Length: 146
Length: 146
DNA sequence: TTGATACTGATAATCATTTTCAGAAAGAAG
DNA sequence: CTTCTTTCTGAAAATGATTATCAGTATCAA
Image (cartoon, rainbow over all chains, first blue to last red; front, side, top):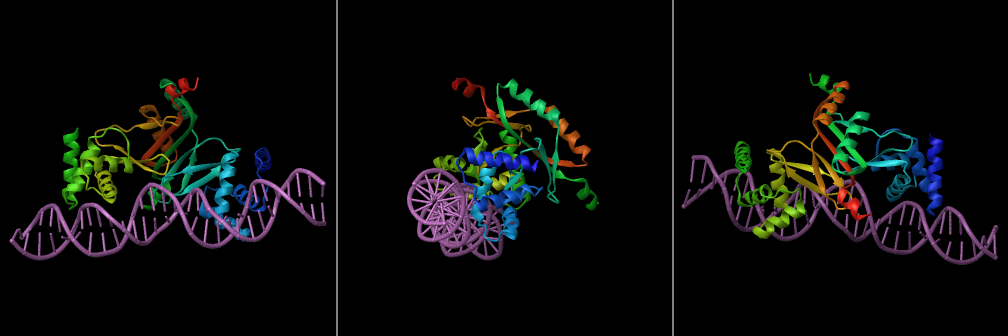
């Protein structure tokens, strides 16, 4: 998995005449080795911890390229921050977000996907992308609240 | 429909000790009489056209209240702008967004809604809210592109 | 009519993200 | 390895949507 992402990334850089610079590699390294969804700030902090010279702008720039290469996906939960998640080697999934503890649950439902396709077809609409976010309260938080 | 929204709004203001000020009424008036989805800027322009004294900040403030009253819904398409749509008297619906012409198609699919409920139940998750956005190319744009 | 309080518009502040820019690094060519 | 061109970097300034501030104004209950 990691090897492949590495390969895809290298190939993307090469094909687009983008240099394999050290800072870019550092951001890639940290991103690829972190499983959770990351905000830019969080990713910056993590990268900075290991590679203290990294700059904030570089993280933005690197993530843009990493997304373009198809390795990461940018998600917007409407909280004012960009979030990134792994894309390459991961199946498409939707998100359930607990508004209490902010936990993110990734969910998979092929039937919903199919229905969207059917729905789109009825409108002669070709889907390139979609986003399903379910907000609510997770089981843990419900228990804690009584 | 409009009479009811008006009534709900008045009641909300009253119950929350919010005054029925002229500028607030003006924003409400324009919003309620405009069917399309509105961005703050657009709503500001429309309101300004009829009521030239309106201020930008007032539009933001009024829409916040109008949303709190349950009459409007704030939507975020990830384009950096807040969008507002009518909520009171309108059924819940999802959005298909044409990335070419930016057209917004409102779609309704009870089955998808049901499946989300089932999905949530499987995770002991209680839904308060959800958002399904389908991006792609509409029929019109596909024809124009050949 | 009055007085307390909420509201307004203009403007400044905020804050995530982008851009700018001078110096540094990558990579091709010799 | 050196040189040269071009891209990249980090720091700091700019951007742009949204929010807060504030002095003057409007609302509304009494």
